[in-house]
Amino acid sequence: MRWWDLDPVLELEKELFPEDAWSRGMFWSELAHARGPDATRRYVVAETPEKRVLGYAGLAANGDLADVQTIAVARDQWGTGLGSRLLTELLRAATAFECAEVLLECRVDNIRAQKLYERFGFEPIGFRRGYYQPGNIDALVMRLTTPSDSGSAAGSPSVQETEING
Image 1 (cartoon, helix red, strand yellow):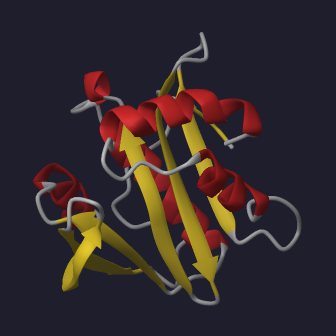
Image 2: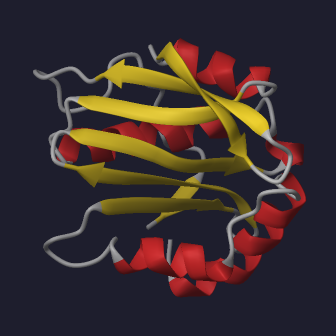
């Protein structure tokens, strides 16, 4: 993800997460940690050849632990495998950052996302009560232990059909 992706990313963010959308400042802060030799973040954008943003995802790494910060896919792309391709990119980044575990929070009412994460081997480990505000929605915390002997995430689909810039 680059600075010029922010406007379309923010539009999609507000459409998909109207109650708890990230602000421009939050994205800028994440992108500031995604560049240079000491980068601890990886953000990717999926777009059409015409530069329409179809989805985006981000991961933060700290030591041997990574955290999926966000994954978003335009509604007209649901069911196309784009979420899987974005998650695959994040898990590749976790491997590159040499993270042993990947954590994420998912709304308890987002069954579609939970099924995606479970297909990749994430397991529920707890809840964060009232995590999503202002709706006071609980988050399901999920964890994946990454393979230590592989260059990519086990069972991850290929990323070929969608251009992912980052």
